[in-house]
Length: 608
Ligand code: M6R
Image (cartoon, rainbow, N blue to C red; front, side):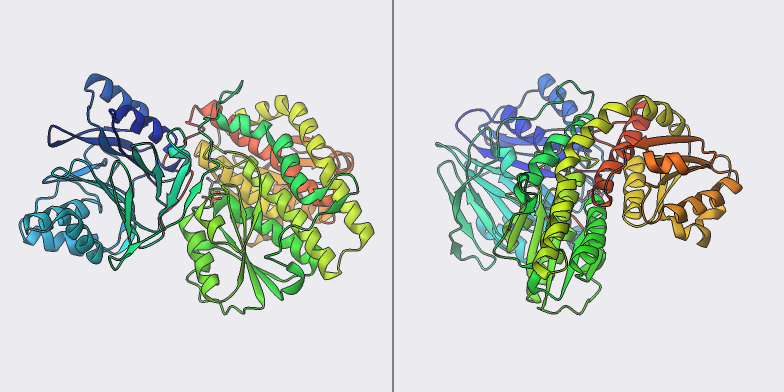
Protein backbone atom coordinates (compact mmCIF):
# COMPACT_ATOMS: atom_id res chain seq x y z
CA UNK A 1 0.00 0.00 0.00
CA UNK A 2 1.03 3.66 0.00
CA UNK A 3 1.68 5.47 -3.25
CA UNK A 4 4.96 7.01 -4.29
CA UNK A 5 5.73 9.52 -6.98
CA UNK A 6 8.78 11.53 -7.94
CA UNK A 7 9.69 14.04 -10.65
CA UNK A 8 13.11 15.30 -11.75
CA UNK A 9 11.86 18.14 -13.91
CA UNK A 10 12.46 21.47 -15.56
CA UNK A 11 9.26 23.13 -14.35
CA UNK A 12 7.88 23.37 -10.80
CA UNK A 13 6.79 19.93 -9.66
CA UNK A 14 4.61 20.17 -6.57
CA UNK A 15 1.27 20.53 -8.37
CA UNK A 16 2.09 17.68 -10.74
CA UNK A 17 3.20 15.50 -7.86
CA UNK A 18 -0.12 16.00 -6.11
CA UNK A 19 -2.05 15.28 -9.34
CA UNK A 20 -0.11 12.04 -9.69
CA UNK A 21 -0.85 11.18 -6.04
CA UNK A 22 -4.55 11.55 -6.80
CA UNK A 23 -4.15 8.60 -9.15
CA UNK A 24 -2.49 6.61 -6.37
CA UNK A 25 -4.98 7.40 -3.63
CA UNK A 26 -6.39 3.89 -4.06
CA UNK A 27 -3.21 2.72 -2.30
CA UNK A 28 -3.99 4.57 0.90
CA UNK A 29 -5.49 7.81 2.08
CA UNK A 30 -4.49 8.24 5.74
CA UNK A 31 -2.17 11.17 5.10
CA UNK A 32 -0.09 12.63 2.29
CA UNK A 33 3.00 14.71 1.80
CA UNK A 34 5.37 16.23 -0.72
CA UNK A 35 9.01 17.36 -0.52
CA UNK A 36 11.07 19.42 -2.95
CA UNK A 37 14.51 20.97 -3.01
CA UNK A 38 14.72 24.73 -3.47
CA UNK A 39 17.68 27.01 -2.97
CA UNK A 40 19.77 24.09 -1.77
CA UNK A 41 17.40 23.02 0.99
CA UNK A 42 14.70 20.41 1.48
CA UNK A 43 11.17 21.65 2.10
CA UNK A 44 8.01 19.70 2.73
CA UNK A 45 4.28 20.01 3.26
CA UNK A 46 2.30 17.23 4.88
CA UNK A 47 -1.30 16.77 5.96
CA UNK A 48 -3.32 14.22 7.87
CA UNK A 49 -6.28 12.61 6.06
CA UNK A 50 -7.22 12.73 2.40
CA UNK A 51 -5.19 14.34 -0.35
CA UNK A 52 -7.54 17.29 -0.45
CA UNK A 53 -6.06 18.39 2.91
CA UNK A 54 -2.57 18.42 1.41
CA UNK A 55 -3.89 20.46 -1.52
CA UNK A 56 -5.33 23.02 0.88
CA UNK A 57 -2.05 23.13 2.76
CA UNK A 58 -0.15 23.73 -0.47
CA UNK A 59 -2.51 26.54 -1.42
CA UNK A 60 -1.79 28.24 1.88
CA UNK A 61 1.93 27.56 1.67
CA UNK A 62 3.01 26.75 -1.88
CA UNK A 63 6.15 24.74 -2.51
CA UNK A 64 8.48 25.62 -5.36
CA UNK A 65 11.24 23.42 -6.78
CA UNK A 66 11.78 21.41 -9.95
CA UNK A 67 12.63 18.16 -8.21
CA UNK A 68 10.41 16.41 -5.68
CA UNK A 69 8.97 13.28 -4.17
CA UNK A 70 5.49 12.67 -2.77
CA UNK A 71 3.53 10.03 -0.90
CA UNK A 72 0.02 8.95 0.00
CA UNK A 73 0.00 6.75 3.10
CA UNK A 74 -1.75 3.69 4.43
CA UNK A 75 -0.45 3.53 7.97
CA UNK A 76 1.38 0.40 9.10
CA UNK A 77 3.69 1.66 11.86
CA UNK A 78 2.52 4.75 13.69
CA UNK A 79 -0.85 6.48 13.74
CA UNK A 80 -2.00 8.41 10.66
CA UNK A 81 -0.87 11.79 12.00
CA UNK A 82 0.90 14.62 10.21
CA UNK A 83 4.06 13.82 12.14
CA UNK A 84 4.07 10.24 10.83
CA UNK A 85 3.21 11.33 7.28
CA UNK A 86 5.95 10.95 4.66
CA UNK A 87 8.34 12.37 3.46
CA UNK A 88 10.53 11.79 6.50
CA UNK A 89 13.53 14.06 6.89
CA UNK A 90 16.86 13.53 8.58
CA UNK A 91 19.79 15.83 8.17
CA UNK A 92 19.47 16.66 4.48
CA UNK A 93 17.78 13.39 3.46
CA UNK A 94 14.10 12.99 2.50
CA UNK A 95 12.47 9.57 2.19
CA UNK A 96 9.10 8.25 1.02
CA UNK A 97 8.45 4.56 1.46
CA UNK A 98 5.91 1.91 0.55
CA UNK A 99 6.29 -1.39 2.44
CA UNK A 100 7.61 -2.42 5.84
CA UNK A 101 11.16 -2.27 7.18
CA UNK A 102 11.00 -5.44 9.26
CA UNK A 103 14.21 -4.90 11.22
CA UNK A 104 13.40 -1.27 12.03
CA UNK A 105 13.36 -1.84 15.81
CA UNK A 106 16.90 -3.22 15.82
CA UNK A 107 18.15 -0.42 13.53
CA UNK A 108 16.37 2.21 15.58
CA UNK A 109 18.03 1.00 18.80
CA UNK A 110 21.41 1.01 17.11
CA UNK A 111 20.96 4.50 15.67
CA UNK A 112 19.51 5.88 18.91
CA UNK A 113 22.49 4.49 20.83
CA UNK A 114 24.70 6.44 18.43
CA UNK A 115 22.79 9.64 19.21
CA UNK A 116 20.00 9.72 16.58
CA UNK A 117 16.81 11.44 17.69
CA UNK A 118 13.69 9.97 16.15
CA UNK A 119 10.77 12.24 15.35
CA UNK A 120 8.15 9.68 14.30
CA UNK A 121 6.69 6.28 15.22
CA UNK A 122 7.26 4.91 11.72
CA UNK A 123 9.50 2.12 10.50
CA UNK A 124 10.49 4.34 7.56
CA UNK A 125 12.39 6.92 9.56
CA UNK A 126 15.27 4.47 10.10
CA UNK A 127 15.96 4.69 6.35
CA UNK A 128 16.33 8.48 6.54
CA UNK A 129 18.39 8.27 9.73
CA UNK A 130 20.68 5.55 8.34
CA UNK A 131 21.31 7.47 5.13
CA UNK A 132 22.00 10.67 7.06
CA UNK A 133 24.45 8.84 9.31
CA UNK A 134 26.29 7.32 6.34
CA UNK A 135 26.54 10.78 4.76
CA UNK A 136 27.92 12.23 8.00
CA UNK A 137 30.41 9.34 8.00
CA UNK A 138 31.65 10.68 4.66
CA UNK A 139 29.91 8.43 2.14
CA UNK A 140 28.61 9.82 -1.17
CA UNK A 141 24.86 9.60 -1.91
CA UNK A 142 25.09 6.41 -3.97
CA UNK A 143 27.52 4.78 -1.57
CA UNK A 144 25.21 5.60 1.33
CA UNK A 145 22.25 4.19 -0.60
CA UNK A 146 24.07 0.93 -1.32
CA UNK A 147 25.14 0.63 2.32
CA UNK A 148 21.61 1.36 3.60
CA UNK A 149 20.11 -1.28 1.28
CA UNK A 150 22.50 -3.84 2.73
CA UNK A 151 21.17 -3.12 6.25
CA UNK A 152 17.39 -2.95 5.82
CA UNK A 153 15.24 -6.08 5.73
CA UNK A 154 11.65 -6.21 4.56
CA UNK A 155 9.70 -4.82 1.66
CA UNK A 156 10.14 -1.42 0.14
CA UNK A 157 9.55 0.91 -2.70
CA UNK A 158 11.69 3.92 -1.79
CA UNK A 159 12.26 7.36 -3.26
CA UNK A 160 14.97 9.53 -1.76
CA UNK A 161 16.17 13.09 -2.12
CA UNK A 162 19.57 14.24 -0.91
CA UNK A 163 19.66 17.97 -0.25
CA UNK A 164 23.20 18.32 -1.56
CA UNK A 165 22.40 16.55 -4.85
CA UNK A 166 19.46 18.64 -6.10
CA UNK A 167 19.31 17.03 -9.54
CA UNK A 168 18.76 13.37 -8.58
CA UNK A 169 16.15 11.08 -7.06
CA UNK A 170 17.37 7.69 -5.89
CA UNK A 171 14.80 4.88 -5.85
CA UNK A 172 14.88 1.26 -4.70
CA UNK A 173 12.54 -1.67 -5.02
CA UNK A 174 12.14 -4.84 -3.03
CA UNK A 175 8.54 -6.01 -3.24
CA UNK A 176 6.18 -3.11 -3.93
CA UNK A 177 6.31 -2.07 -7.57
CA UNK A 178 8.16 0.97 -8.87
CA UNK A 179 8.12 2.25 -12.40
CA UNK A 180 10.36 4.82 -14.02
CA UNK A 181 8.91 7.16 -16.63
CA UNK A 182 11.08 8.60 -19.41
CA UNK A 183 10.03 12.11 -20.42
CA UNK A 184 11.44 14.83 -22.62
CA UNK A 185 14.20 16.36 -20.50
CA UNK A 186 12.33 15.17 -17.40
CA UNK A 187 12.16 11.84 -15.60
CA UNK A 188 9.44 10.39 -13.41
CA UNK A 189 9.00 7.72 -10.78
CA UNK A 190 5.78 6.16 -9.56
CA UNK A 191 4.20 3.19 -7.82
CA UNK A 192 2.45 2.36 -11.07
CA UNK A 193 2.15 3.41 -14.69
CA UNK A 194 -1.28 4.96 -14.07
CA UNK A 195 0.31 7.61 -11.84
CA UNK A 196 2.72 8.52 -14.62
CA UNK A 197 0.21 8.35 -17.48
CA UNK A 198 -0.34 12.15 -17.76
CA UNK A 199 3.44 12.62 -18.12
CA UNK A 200 4.65 9.71 -20.21
CA UNK A 201 3.83 6.19 -21.38
CA UNK A 202 7.49 5.34 -22.00
CA UNK A 203 8.31 3.33 -18.90
CA UNK A 204 10.73 0.91 -17.26
CA UNK A 205 9.76 -1.38 -14.39
CA UNK A 206 12.37 -1.94 -11.69
CA UNK A 207 12.69 -5.55 -10.55
CA UNK A 208 13.17 -6.66 -6.96
CA UNK A 209 16.62 -5.77 -5.66
CA UNK A 210 17.08 -2.91 -8.13
CA UNK A 211 17.94 0.61 -7.19
CA UNK A 212 18.07 3.51 -9.57
CA UNK A 213 19.67 6.91 -9.85
CA UNK A 214 17.28 9.15 -11.74
CA UNK A 215 18.42 12.40 -13.31
CA UNK A 216 16.68 14.87 -15.64
CA UNK A 217 17.74 13.08 -18.79
CA UNK A 218 18.02 9.44 -17.85
CA UNK A 219 18.35 6.71 -15.29
CA UNK A 220 21.08 4.36 -14.22
CA UNK A 221 19.86 1.12 -12.67
CA UNK A 222 21.87 -1.12 -10.33
CA UNK A 223 21.14 -4.59 -9.00
CA UNK A 224 21.47 -5.48 -5.33
CA UNK A 225 25.21 -6.06 -5.76
CA UNK A 226 25.69 -2.62 -7.24
CA UNK A 227 26.24 -3.83 -10.81
CA UNK A 228 24.81 -1.65 -13.55
CA UNK A 229 21.88 -3.47 -15.20
CA UNK A 230 19.53 -2.74 -18.08
CA UNK A 231 15.78 -3.18 -17.73
CA UNK A 232 13.54 -3.09 -20.77
CA UNK A 233 11.70 0.08 -21.76
CA UNK A 234 8.11 -0.46 -22.79
CA UNK A 235 5.07 1.49 -23.82
CA UNK A 236 2.42 1.48 -21.13
CA UNK A 237 -1.25 1.15 -22.04
CA UNK A 238 -2.28 3.01 -18.85
CA UNK A 239 -4.58 5.85 -19.70
CA UNK A 240 -4.20 9.43 -18.52
CA UNK A 241 -7.96 9.72 -18.41
CA UNK A 242 -9.32 9.64 -14.86
CA UNK A 243 -12.62 7.81 -14.54
CA UNK A 244 -15.42 9.90 -13.08
CA UNK A 245 -18.59 8.95 -11.21
CA UNK A 246 -20.90 9.72 -14.13
CA UNK A 247 -24.41 10.31 -12.80
CA UNK A 248 -23.75 8.29 -9.70
CA UNK A 249 -23.14 9.43 -6.13
CA UNK A 250 -20.20 7.14 -5.64
CA UNK A 251 -17.76 5.13 -7.75
CA UNK A 252 -19.10 2.01 -6.07
CA UNK A 253 -22.62 2.74 -7.30
CA UNK A 254 -21.34 3.40 -10.79
CA UNK A 255 -19.36 0.17 -10.72
CA UNK A 256 -22.38 -1.84 -9.55
CA UNK A 257 -24.50 -0.50 -12.42
CA UNK A 258 -21.69 -1.01 -14.94
CA UNK A 259 -21.70 -4.76 -14.38
CA UNK A 260 -23.91 -5.84 -17.28
CA UNK A 261 -21.56 -4.10 -19.76
CA UNK A 262 -18.26 -5.15 -18.23
CA UNK A 263 -19.34 -8.73 -17.61
CA UNK A 264 -20.44 -8.94 -21.27
CA UNK A 265 -17.04 -7.61 -22.34
CA UNK A 266 -15.22 -10.10 -20.12
CA UNK A 267 -17.30 -12.98 -21.43
CA UNK A 268 -16.72 -11.86 -25.00
CA UNK A 269 -13.05 -12.69 -24.51
CA UNK A 270 -13.73 -16.28 -23.45
CA UNK A 271 -16.88 -17.43 -25.23
CA UNK A 272 -18.30 -17.21 -28.70
CA UNK A 273 -21.76 -15.63 -28.43
CA UNK A 274 -22.80 -16.93 -31.87
CA UNK A 275 -22.29 -20.65 -31.45
CA UNK A 276 -22.24 -20.75 -27.63
CA UNK A 277 -18.81 -22.31 -27.37
CA UNK A 278 -15.83 -21.46 -25.23
CA UNK A 279 -12.87 -20.09 -27.14
CA UNK A 280 -9.37 -21.47 -26.45
CA UNK A 281 -7.66 -18.90 -24.27
CA UNK A 282 -3.99 -19.37 -23.58
CA UNK A 283 -1.20 -21.55 -24.91
CA UNK A 284 0.73 -21.19 -21.68
CA UNK A 285 -1.78 -23.00 -19.52
CA UNK A 286 -3.70 -26.19 -20.27
CA UNK A 287 -6.25 -27.29 -17.67
CA UNK A 288 -6.52 -30.65 -19.49
CA UNK A 289 -2.92 -31.51 -18.70
CA UNK A 290 -2.86 -30.88 -14.97
CA UNK A 291 -3.62 -33.25 -12.11
CA UNK A 292 -4.92 -30.59 -9.74
CA UNK A 293 -5.26 -26.88 -9.35
CA UNK A 294 -4.13 -24.67 -6.45
CA UNK A 295 -6.02 -21.38 -6.24
CA UNK A 296 -4.87 -18.57 -4.03
CA UNK A 297 -6.08 -14.99 -3.56
CA UNK A 298 -7.20 -12.50 -0.92
CA UNK A 299 -10.49 -10.92 0.14
CA UNK A 300 -13.16 -10.77 -2.51
CA UNK A 301 -10.82 -12.33 -5.08
CA UNK A 302 -10.44 -15.33 -2.75
CA UNK A 303 -14.21 -15.67 -2.51
CA UNK A 304 -14.44 -15.60 -6.31
CA UNK A 305 -11.82 -18.37 -6.29
CA UNK A 306 -13.88 -20.37 -3.80
CA UNK A 307 -16.85 -20.25 -6.15
CA UNK A 308 -14.45 -21.17 -8.97
CA UNK A 309 -13.43 -24.26 -6.99
CA UNK A 310 -17.02 -25.52 -7.03
CA UNK A 311 -17.09 -25.05 -10.81
CA UNK A 312 -13.69 -26.60 -11.64
CA UNK A 313 -14.52 -29.61 -9.49
CA UNK A 314 -18.05 -29.99 -10.78
CA UNK A 315 -17.60 -29.32 -14.49
CA UNK A 316 -13.96 -30.29 -15.09
CA UNK A 317 -13.58 -32.92 -12.32
CA UNK A 318 -10.36 -31.11 -11.49
CA UNK A 319 -9.41 -31.26 -7.78
CA UNK A 320 -8.85 -27.77 -6.40
CA UNK A 321 -6.94 -26.68 -3.29
CA UNK A 322 -7.81 -23.15 -2.31
CA UNK A 323 -6.40 -20.87 0.33
CA UNK A 324 -6.25 -17.25 1.28
CA UNK A 325 -2.83 -16.24 0.00
CA UNK A 326 -1.54 -15.15 3.41
CA UNK A 327 -1.96 -18.77 4.61
CA UNK A 328 -1.02 -20.51 1.37
CA UNK A 329 2.49 -19.07 1.29
CA UNK A 330 3.38 -20.32 4.78
CA UNK A 331 1.44 -23.59 4.88
CA UNK A 332 4.29 -25.63 3.40
CA UNK A 333 1.94 -27.36 1.00
CA UNK A 334 3.52 -30.29 -0.83
CA UNK A 335 3.27 -29.08 -4.43
CA UNK A 336 3.82 -31.21 -7.48
CA UNK A 337 4.82 -29.88 -10.90
CA UNK A 338 1.87 -31.88 -12.26
CA UNK A 339 -0.38 -29.31 -10.60
CA UNK A 340 -1.03 -25.81 -11.83
CA UNK A 341 -1.62 -22.70 -9.78
CA UNK A 342 -4.15 -19.97 -10.40
CA UNK A 343 -3.95 -16.56 -8.74
CA UNK A 344 -6.84 -14.13 -8.73
CA UNK A 345 -6.31 -10.43 -8.16
CA UNK A 346 -8.00 -7.26 -9.29
CA UNK A 347 -4.95 -5.07 -8.69
CA UNK A 348 -2.34 -7.69 -9.53
CA UNK A 349 -0.17 -6.22 -6.76
CA UNK A 350 -1.49 -7.88 -3.59
CA UNK A 351 1.63 -8.79 -1.61
CA UNK A 352 0.43 -12.14 -0.27
CA UNK A 353 -0.93 -13.27 -3.63
CA UNK A 354 2.30 -12.30 -5.34
CA UNK A 355 4.37 -14.14 -2.73
CA UNK A 356 2.24 -17.27 -3.20
CA UNK A 357 2.75 -17.01 -6.96
CA UNK A 358 6.51 -16.87 -6.49
CA UNK A 359 6.39 -19.83 -4.09
CA UNK A 360 4.54 -21.92 -6.69
CA UNK A 361 6.93 -20.80 -9.42
CA UNK A 362 9.86 -21.99 -7.33
CA UNK A 363 8.14 -25.37 -7.10
CA UNK A 364 7.87 -25.63 -10.86
CA UNK A 365 4.10 -25.13 -11.21
CA UNK A 366 2.58 -23.49 -14.26
CA UNK A 367 1.14 -20.15 -13.20
CA UNK A 368 -2.12 -18.66 -14.39
CA UNK A 369 -3.41 -15.26 -13.26
CA UNK A 370 -6.97 -13.96 -13.39
CA UNK A 371 -6.21 -10.25 -13.37
CA UNK A 372 -7.77 -6.87 -13.95
CA UNK A 373 -4.62 -4.69 -14.05
CA UNK A 374 -2.86 -6.01 -17.14
CA UNK A 375 0.48 -4.33 -16.42
CA UNK A 376 0.65 -5.42 -12.78
CA UNK A 377 3.45 -7.46 -11.24
CA UNK A 378 1.31 -10.60 -10.95
CA UNK A 379 0.32 -10.32 -14.62
CA UNK A 380 3.95 -9.86 -15.62
CA UNK A 381 5.17 -12.84 -13.59
CA UNK A 382 2.46 -15.34 -14.61
CA UNK A 383 2.88 -17.83 -17.46
CA UNK A 384 -0.65 -17.14 -18.65
CA UNK A 385 -2.88 -14.15 -17.97
CA UNK A 386 -6.66 -14.40 -18.00
CA UNK A 387 -7.84 -10.77 -18.09
CA UNK A 388 -11.17 -9.91 -16.50
CA UNK A 389 -11.51 -6.66 -18.49
CA UNK A 390 -13.54 -4.92 -15.80
CA UNK A 391 -11.87 -1.54 -16.41
CA UNK A 392 -10.57 0.58 -13.54
CA UNK A 393 -12.30 -0.23 -10.27
CA UNK A 394 -12.03 2.80 -8.00
CA UNK A 395 -14.37 1.94 -5.11
CA UNK A 396 -12.36 0.15 -2.44
CA UNK A 397 -15.16 -2.39 -2.09
CA UNK A 398 -14.83 -4.69 -5.04
CA UNK A 399 -18.02 -5.21 -7.06
CA UNK A 400 -17.57 -5.36 -10.83
CA UNK A 401 -14.17 -7.03 -10.48
CA UNK A 402 -15.86 -9.80 -8.47
CA UNK A 403 -18.56 -10.56 -11.05
CA UNK A 404 -16.03 -10.32 -13.90
CA UNK A 405 -13.71 -12.70 -12.02
CA UNK A 406 -16.66 -15.07 -11.66
CA UNK A 407 -17.60 -14.79 -15.33
CA UNK A 408 -14.02 -15.59 -16.35
CA UNK A 409 -13.70 -18.48 -13.90
CA UNK A 410 -17.00 -19.94 -15.10
CA UNK A 411 -15.83 -19.81 -18.73
CA UNK A 412 -12.44 -21.28 -17.79
CA UNK A 413 -14.11 -24.12 -15.84
CA UNK A 414 -16.36 -24.97 -18.78
CA UNK A 415 -13.34 -24.85 -21.12
CA UNK A 416 -11.40 -27.05 -18.69
CA UNK A 417 -14.30 -29.53 -18.63
CA UNK A 418 -14.36 -29.54 -22.41
CA UNK A 419 -10.61 -30.16 -22.58
CA UNK A 420 -10.77 -32.90 -19.95
CA UNK A 421 -13.74 -34.60 -21.60
CA UNK A 422 -16.07 -34.07 -18.65
CA UNK A 423 -18.32 -31.57 -20.44
CA UNK A 424 -20.02 -32.73 -23.64
CA UNK A 425 -20.63 -30.51 -26.66
CA UNK A 426 -24.28 -30.15 -25.70
CA UNK A 427 -23.46 -29.33 -22.10
CA UNK A 428 -20.91 -26.77 -23.24
CA UNK A 429 -23.49 -25.07 -25.44
CA UNK A 430 -26.11 -25.04 -22.70
CA UNK A 431 -23.71 -23.64 -20.10
CA UNK A 432 -22.30 -20.99 -22.44
CA UNK A 433 -25.80 -20.02 -23.50
CA UNK A 434 -26.62 -19.29 -19.85
CA UNK A 435 -23.48 -17.17 -19.56
CA UNK A 436 -24.37 -15.17 -22.66
CA UNK A 437 -27.84 -14.45 -21.27
CA UNK A 438 -26.39 -13.22 -18.00
CA UNK A 439 -25.64 -9.53 -18.79
CA UNK A 440 -29.25 -9.01 -19.88
CA UNK A 441 -30.58 -10.61 -16.69
CA UNK A 442 -28.19 -8.53 -14.60
CA UNK A 443 -29.57 -5.37 -16.18
CA UNK A 444 -33.14 -6.52 -15.51
CA UNK A 445 -32.32 -7.17 -11.86
CA UNK A 446 -30.51 -3.86 -11.38
CA UNK A 447 -33.47 -2.02 -12.89
CA UNK A 448 -36.05 -3.70 -10.69
CA UNK A 449 -34.77 -4.27 -7.15
CA UNK A 450 -33.80 -0.78 -6.06
CA UNK A 451 -36.98 0.17 -4.06
CA UNK A 452 -36.97 -3.07 -2.10
CA UNK A 453 -33.25 -2.81 -1.43
CA UNK A 454 -33.52 0.75 -0.12
CA UNK A 455 -36.25 -0.30 2.30
CA UNK A 456 -34.24 -3.24 3.60
CA UNK A 457 -30.93 -1.47 3.81
CA UNK A 458 -32.51 1.21 5.99
CA UNK A 459 -33.41 -1.64 8.40
CA UNK A 460 -29.93 -3.13 8.13
CA UNK A 461 -28.27 0.21 8.82
CA UNK A 462 -29.80 0.13 12.32
CA UNK A 463 -28.36 -3.31 13.15
CA UNK A 464 -25.19 -4.19 14.97
CA UNK A 465 -24.71 -7.68 13.54
CA UNK A 466 -25.93 -9.48 10.45
CA UNK A 467 -25.60 -13.14 9.49
CA UNK A 468 -25.50 -14.34 5.87
CA UNK A 469 -26.23 -17.99 5.00
CA UNK A 470 -25.97 -20.06 1.83
CA UNK A 471 -25.16 -23.53 0.53
CA UNK A 472 -23.03 -24.59 -2.43
CA UNK A 473 -21.73 -21.57 -4.33
CA UNK A 474 -24.08 -19.47 -2.21
CA UNK A 475 -21.83 -20.15 0.79
CA UNK A 476 -18.87 -18.14 -0.59
CA UNK A 477 -21.44 -15.65 -1.81
CA UNK A 478 -22.77 -15.32 1.76
CA UNK A 479 -19.21 -14.52 2.88
CA UNK A 480 -18.87 -11.97 0.09
CA UNK A 481 -22.18 -10.31 1.08
CA UNK A 482 -20.95 -10.09 4.67
CA UNK A 483 -17.54 -8.73 3.60
CA UNK A 484 -19.21 -6.03 1.48
CA UNK A 485 -21.47 -4.95 4.34
CA UNK A 486 -18.75 -4.82 6.96
CA UNK A 487 -16.15 -3.03 4.89
CA UNK A 488 -18.30 -0.07 3.89
CA UNK A 489 -20.95 0.19 6.64
CA UNK A 490 -18.78 -1.07 9.54
CA UNK A 491 -21.69 -3.30 10.65
CA UNK A 492 -20.42 -6.61 11.94
CA UNK A 493 -21.42 -9.35 9.50
CA UNK A 494 -20.47 -12.99 8.97
CA UNK A 495 -21.16 -15.43 6.18
CA UNK A 496 -21.69 -19.11 7.00
CA UNK A 497 -22.46 -22.31 5.19
CA UNK A 498 -26.14 -22.75 6.05
CA UNK A 499 -25.43 -26.30 7.24
CA UNK A 500 -22.92 -24.98 9.78
CA UNK A 501 -25.55 -22.87 11.52
CA UNK A 502 -26.37 -25.43 14.14
CA UNK A 503 -22.68 -25.98 14.92
CA UNK A 504 -22.31 -22.65 16.64
CA UNK A 505 -23.68 -19.48 15.02
CA UNK A 506 -27.27 -20.40 15.88
CA UNK A 507 -26.45 -19.32 19.44
CA UNK A 508 -26.35 -15.72 18.18
CA UNK A 509 -29.85 -15.70 16.82
CA UNK A 510 -32.50 -13.55 18.43
CA UNK A 511 -35.03 -10.97 17.29
CA UNK A 512 -32.27 -8.37 16.83
CA UNK A 513 -30.22 -10.40 14.41
CA UNK A 514 -31.18 -10.22 10.75
CA UNK A 515 -30.25 -13.36 8.85
CA UNK A 516 -29.87 -12.95 5.10
CA UNK A 517 -30.46 -16.28 3.43
CA UNK A 518 -29.33 -16.72 -0.17
CA UNK A 519 -31.46 -19.52 -1.54
CA UNK A 520 -32.35 -19.77 -5.20
CA UNK A 521 -34.45 -22.82 -6.05
CA UNK A 522 -31.46 -25.08 -6.72
CA UNK A 523 -30.32 -28.54 -5.57
CA UNK A 524 -29.88 -27.24 -2.04
CA UNK A 525 -33.09 -25.28 -1.69
CA UNK A 526 -35.00 -27.68 0.58
CA UNK A 527 -32.05 -28.06 2.90
CA UNK A 528 -31.53 -24.30 3.13
CA UNK A 529 -35.24 -23.85 3.87
CA UNK A 530 -34.84 -26.28 6.80
CA UNK A 531 -32.02 -24.10 8.11
CA UNK A 532 -34.28 -21.09 7.73
CA UNK A 533 -36.92 -22.85 9.83
CA UNK A 534 -34.31 -23.24 12.54
CA UNK A 535 -33.66 -19.51 12.46
CA UNK A 536 -37.40 -18.67 12.44
CA UNK A 537 -38.03 -21.01 15.39
CA UNK A 538 -35.60 -18.90 17.43
CA UNK A 539 -37.18 -15.58 16.54
CA UNK A 540 -34.53 -14.66 13.95
CA UNK A 541 -35.47 -12.01 11.36
CA UNK A 542 -34.99 -13.55 7.95
CA UNK A 543 -34.35 -11.70 4.72
CA UNK A 544 -34.70 -14.31 2.01
CA UNK A 545 -33.02 -13.70 -1.34
CA UNK A 546 -34.52 -16.25 -3.66
CA UNK A 547 -35.82 -16.67 -7.19
CA UNK A 548 -39.36 -16.88 -8.59
CA UNK A 549 -39.50 -20.69 -8.22
CA UNK A 550 -38.22 -20.49 -4.64
CA UNK A 551 -40.63 -17.69 -3.75
CA UNK A 552 -43.56 -19.67 -5.11
CA UNK A 553 -42.98 -22.69 -2.91
CA UNK A 554 -41.42 -21.25 0.21
CA UNK A 555 -44.22 -21.03 2.74
CA UNK A 556 -42.04 -19.59 5.43
CA UNK A 557 -43.11 -16.30 6.94
CA UNK A 558 -39.96 -14.28 6.39
CA UNK A 559 -39.41 -10.68 7.36
CA UNK A 560 -38.71 -9.75 3.76
CA UNK A 561 -38.03 -11.35 0.43
CA UNK A 562 -36.01 -10.20 -2.52
CA UNK A 563 -37.17 -12.18 -5.51
CA UNK A 564 -34.91 -12.48 -8.55
CA UNK A 565 -35.58 -14.21 -11.86
CA UNK A 566 -35.06 -18.00 -11.91
CA UNK A 567 -31.74 -18.63 -13.64
CA UNK A 568 -29.43 -21.56 -14.40
CA UNK A 569 -27.21 -22.58 -11.52
CA UNK A 570 -23.96 -21.52 -13.23
CA UNK A 571 -24.95 -17.86 -13.44
CA UNK A 572 -26.74 -17.63 -10.08
CA UNK A 573 -23.65 -16.37 -8.17
CA UNK A 574 -23.26 -13.38 -10.50
CA UNK A 575 -26.99 -12.56 -10.41
CA UNK A 576 -27.33 -13.01 -6.65
CA UNK A 577 -24.26 -10.82 -6.04
CA UNK A 578 -26.24 -7.79 -7.16
CA UNK A 579 -28.71 -7.51 -4.25
CA UNK A 580 -25.85 -8.22 -1.82
CA UNK A 581 -23.77 -5.38 -3.24
CA UNK A 582 -26.73 -3.00 -3.28
CA UNK A 583 -27.78 -3.86 0.28
CA UNK A 584 -24.29 -3.03 1.52
CA UNK A 585 -24.08 0.10 -0.60
CA UNK A 586 -27.41 1.57 0.55
CA UNK A 587 -26.84 0.62 4.19
CA UNK A 588 -23.54 2.53 4.03
CA UNK A 589 -25.22 5.51 2.34
CA UNK A 590 -27.88 5.62 5.08
CA UNK A 591 -25.14 5.54 7.68
CA UNK A 592 -23.20 8.30 5.95
CA UNK A 593 -19.89 6.43 5.76
CA UNK A 594 -17.21 7.15 3.20
CA UNK A 595 -18.41 4.54 0.71
CA UNK A 596 -15.59 4.72 -1.83
CA UNK A 597 -12.77 5.10 0.67
CA UNK A 598 -13.88 3.34 3.85
CA UNK A 599 -11.81 3.77 6.97
CA UNK A 600 -8.64 1.75 7.46
CA UNK A 601 -8.74 0.16 3.99
CA UNK A 602 -6.84 0.58 0.74
CA UNK A 603 -7.58 -0.68 -2.72
CA UNK A 604 -4.22 -2.29 -3.28
CA UNK A 605 -2.67 -4.19 -0.39
CA UNK A 606 1.05 -4.34 -1.03
CA UNK A 607 2.14 -5.27 2.49
CA UNK A 608 1.79 -8.59 4.30
O1 M6R B 1 -6.43 -6.55 -5.78
P1 M6R B 1 -6.86 -7.85 -5.20
O2 M6R B 1 -8.01 -8.47 -5.92
O3 M6R B 1 -5.72 -8.84 -5.06
O4 M6R B 1 -7.35 -7.50 -3.74
C1 M6R B 1 -7.76 -8.48 -2.85
C2 M6R B 1 -8.50 -7.89 -1.68
O5 M6R B 1 -7.68 -6.97 -1.00
C3 M6R B 1 -9.79 -7.19 -2.09
O6 M6R B 1 -10.63 -8.06 -2.79
C4 M6R B 1 -10.52 -6.67 -0.84
O7 M6R B 1 -10.96 -7.73 -0.05
C5 M6R B 1 -11.68 -5.77 -1.27
N1 M6R B 1 -11.65 -4.56 -0.50
C6 M6R B 1 -13.02 -6.40 -1.06
O8 M6R B 1 -14.06 -5.57 -1.42
